[in-house]
Length: 102
Image (cartoon, rainbow, N blue to C red; front, side, top):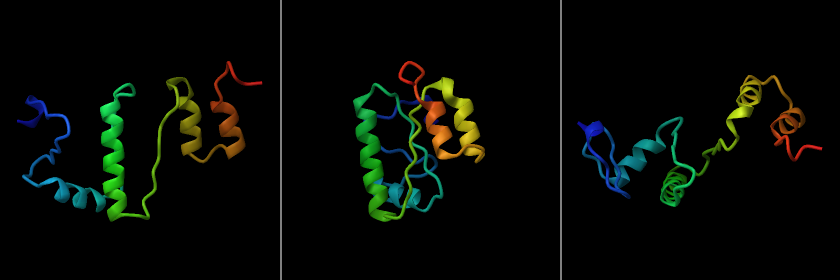
């Protein structure tokens, strides 16, 4: 079972198939949303994300990227933004780190 084994660094696994790397990117490019997880302090994860984004961009140059890079304490603000309850100025003001806010 896949969950019981470790995947070597730099290796792609497409659960439930024997597809190769190009097939995986072709399959991902057909999806409406692709979520890339990471550990923030792992350089290898960032390289993997860049490689993945570049490969997807080759197949979907019209794709949209979204990045979540906010501290946990602003999750309520992100939730309100996602629900279209905040304009951009209010969103930016509310997510500004408190120690840097004027």
